[in-house]
Image (cartoon, rainbow, N blue to C red):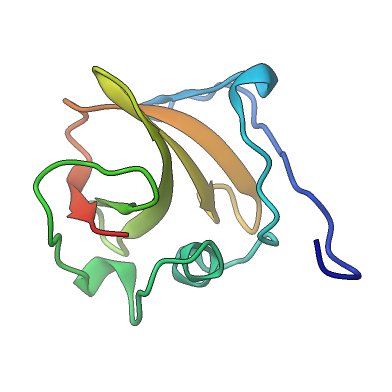
Length: 119
């Protein structure tokens, strides 16, 4: 880890949002800093993305670890896929809650999923 960087493993309480937050023992360490832009956060995680999440187009049909997941909505949202499971993905994201990092499990049948991006 570079000088001055911190490890962030923020976990949010369960909310009414679709998907569920995951427990601390389930989370790999993430060294990207919280960002008030979901796009800049996933870029810090290594995805080559630019522009606004709302305008991004999926480029793969199945989720891949290290790839992105796009969400529908008026402003759109993108998150980084940490793990692919049989019925869901574990994601890390920034700015789902304003300017904070959160981790969630998203079921494949979640109606808010727009699609996936390759790593």
